[in-house]
Image 1 (cartoon, helix red, strand yellow):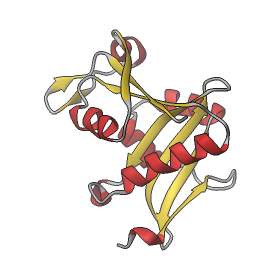
Image 2: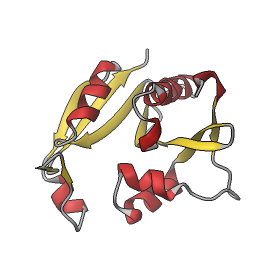
Image 3: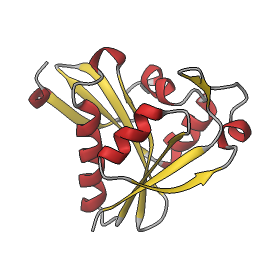
Image 4: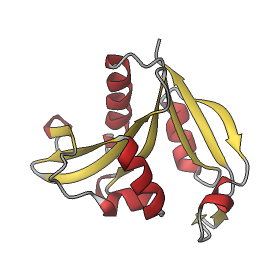
Length: 156
């Protein structure tokens, strides 16, 4: 697959919601429905094949948050996630946001490293976030998700 063939477009009202990909990054359909109502969902496709998704939501006039970012398992580690982060940064700048936020579980070691390599700095920790907001236990690599680690990237 050639990354130049990757097209990122806003999901249109008549298009099917890419549930499978969204649920890969967030196992709560209720939380996904909430942020889909408030934010904008973008799909990344190559030759009509859905490869990835990103959901962006305005927190206030200065902060845009990545609520969900997911790359199809068979296309991970090919640079698509980095392209989505670049897209989110460019989108935020074009819409005059000053900061980009993203959160992930304390058990998500790969994602934590991914965001830090992309220039995000640790902002805060929401204690017991996954215990309070999810009915089922979330495990990653044998570690339970408990706290949410919030990251921020300055765009100015």
